[in-house]
Structure formats: C-alpha cells, structure tokens
Image (tube, rainbow, N blue to C red; front, side, top):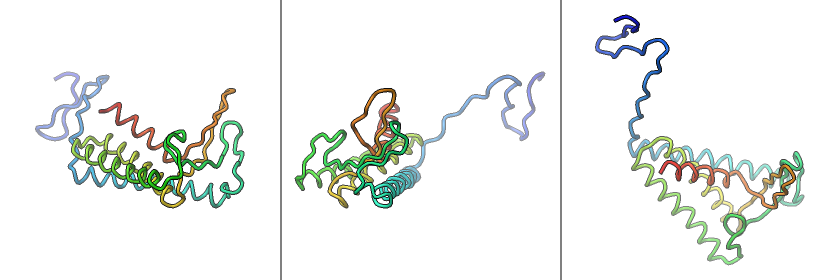
Length: 184
C-alpha cells in the first residue's frame, strides 16, 4: 500500500505512516512479586537518601549544635527543628506512647500501601508507594534513634517567610501520596 512502511517481521503490523503517531499500548500489570520488589528497592533508595542527608547536615555539618546554616538565604537555610508530632508539629508531645504510636503508624501505613499497589500492579503507583514508604520509614527511623524527626530544610521566597522546616522524607511522603491520590 502506498505510504506504509513495510514490517520487518512477517505477521507484524506495519509501522505508522510518516507524520502519524503510533498508538501507545498500556503496559501489562506487574506481578505481585515484581511489584513488591520494586516497592522495596524504591523505598530503600529514598530511605538511604533521607538518612544520608540527615547524617550529613545534622552530624557532619553539625547543625545539631549550630542550629542555623545559611546556604542561600532566604531561598535555602538549614534550620534544626526536632519534630515530635506529625506535619507542622501537630500532636507534638514527649510521651513515649505517641512516639512509638507514630513509629507503628508509619510501618502499618507503609505495609498497607504496599499491599494495595502490589495487587493493582500499576508500575507508576508501585514506584509512588515505594517513595511514600521510604519517606515514612525514614522519619520512623528518626523517632527510634532521636525520639523526634530531624527537620532541617527551610525555604522562603518572594517576601514570604516560611517558619517551618522539613526533610527529604517529608518531600517523598508528600509527593508520593499526592501521586497515589491522583491515580487512585
């Protein structure tokens, strides 16, 4: 036929005509084992990045004692903040039950999200679940090690003075959860 590009293999559909876009076929769902493996690998990467940044900034740069390091003020400042609650310090307290309850919650939510996405098998959701789980477990690690989450990133801009600090795990939890909510 005029305008068609011949197939390279017998029985293969001809390629799209010049100027046309080929249809994208949906990717087959991942097997539960492959999905679990991807969640674990993605979560491990996020956990390692989170732990490495906290170690570097809090211990090596000594933010724990210096309390403030101006990197690119006001756009980026490292400010030591120990968060004993959840986002924005909500429900903060020094009670051991709260601390261990939040550790347990991070583990339970990570497991539940992992189970949910491994059953669906959608690759993008599996990656997002790994990102959320890695972030949640990074903050849980802080609670076990320090009794609070080590927050240190502070970003302000354009006359808006941000009083809050956050960390890599917080970014991962937020980004992954937003993606999961969007795709669910």
